Length: 428
Ligand SMILES: Cc1cc2nc3c(=O)[nH]c(=O)nc-3n(C[C@H](O)[C@H](O)[C@H](O)COP(=O)(O)OP(=O)(O)OC[C@H]3O[C@@H](n4cnc5c(N)ncnc54)[C@H](O)[C@@H]3O)c2cc1C
Image 1 (cartoon, rainbow, N blue to C red):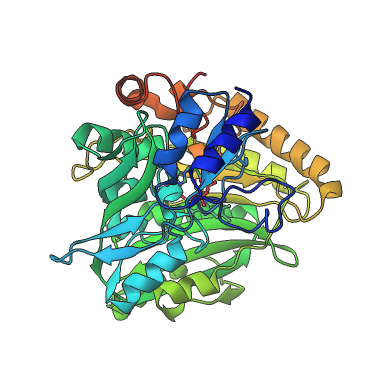
Image 2: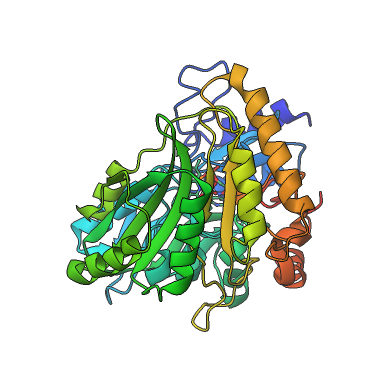
């Protein structure tokens, strides 16, 4: 049967599921399906020519929640949050965003790891890695997953066992549509958080890298750095202290700042997690993407390449790096996240206009080629799947030493590659 006939016959037999076509009113904004959509729609994927993708927050930089002539299973209505009786975990819907989750938990006196932006879908974020302002204290998103409900490749709704969970922690939607996650939660605390801005020059970048290496960074502190275009280039340190003991947080920040040149601006203040989302509003730049490379450290060689690229950096695009992320720690659950301890280095070609995209892309391509071509010992082979241009890395490179296990789990749970459009892509 042709794709459109399959869809029409499906629509006729499932009146409770709303199917929108591009010409329908509300196409851009409506939710296409409801709770059991994954299960109901699965036969379309296996027994017909209909390609389908899953969409929650819709923040994949490379737009991989949509495929040409395919069906989008929109799970945003699966957005409920329920705290367990023992108050250690919460069950969250497969389409909940970080802001909605944080705000519902906050009302009940709890908090959990999240990304830097409230609009990110929690499942898309956590199952592919999940960096954020609480990472050093509470771990990455994938580390907080303790259970899942999944529509598997046979179209059955199942509770994930230990093996499937191992895959869900790093393999995104490769094993099925995740209708629920069970995640660890923690008693809520107030953050001490905000941006500290410095002039963007090589001396300051070296000073920041050295200060962090010299200091013992307490687990409450998470730092992420951006070279941004804010009326002239600045290095912005996003600082978060994840504990109610703000005196201790201020002491650590002071120790860090005494090693650095005087900042242009210091916006660190007490706020809730939802307040944090309100304070971090990245500019909406519809063109371009964010690309990444994992590194062991920001070596002098890498800093020199970045600083050279800064001399010709186009407007709006950014360079960013994380503090050292302790991944695969002793307490990390079994997982398929492809990196051990690393720093996430990223750089965008994002702009507000299509006209500016070509220049931004060419700058980005040149920087990527110089970094990868430098052979610097600090470079690691992998990169962050959501921030990886599809042609840059194979699934094998992205999963690193987790590749044999990831492939085995894919073979076990989705041998026919029903979920073939998931990120990262296994060969078709
Ligand atoms: C502005 C912005 C800021 C960001 N900040 C951070 C950050 O601070 N830290 C960080 O780690 N990352 C960050 N990212 C990257 C982001 O976390 C990933 O791109 C993430 O995968 C987006 O998830 P989503 O649900 O919003 O997007 P979507 O495009 O809807 O989903 C992303 C992927 O996950 C799959 N997926 C989503 N939900 C399900 C489900 N229920 N079942 C099965 N598969 C599913 C989709 O099919 C798709 O492949 C940021 C991205 C943007 C655009």
